[in-house]
Length: 86
Length: 86
Figure: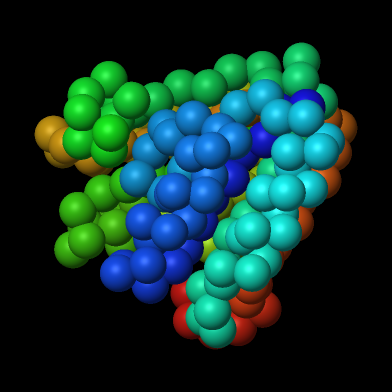
């Protein structure tokens, strides 16, 4: 399936969510990752994120069937095109 | 169709994207909105966002067919359940 993950952590802890997410998905914007993922990897990702979060922090994981994303448009600068987040 | 919008603007300008997005969608996390939207409203939303963005800022709009969102899980605190973002 295809997953979009958006995290909202305290500023000095966002790198932790990014580090976990990057092992499974592609970083596409400041706090957004997406990509194809297997059911097994998704379970692992969920577990790691649940363990990471502290009070006041949250992460949303959207699951889509692989062919259901009709369109994805980036307005402004596409962070995946430069090195800012690498 | 169903739309997920994630914005990444300079900290002192995020409220502008939120204000635009809220006229069409529901605010679900710090920089994320989602909801059903008509094709006409989506065109308006796109136009307003394109006009808003400055260099270094970006917004991603994901379009899904209305029945293709398989699952949506919030880990941690669900910002829509409190008043922080209202």
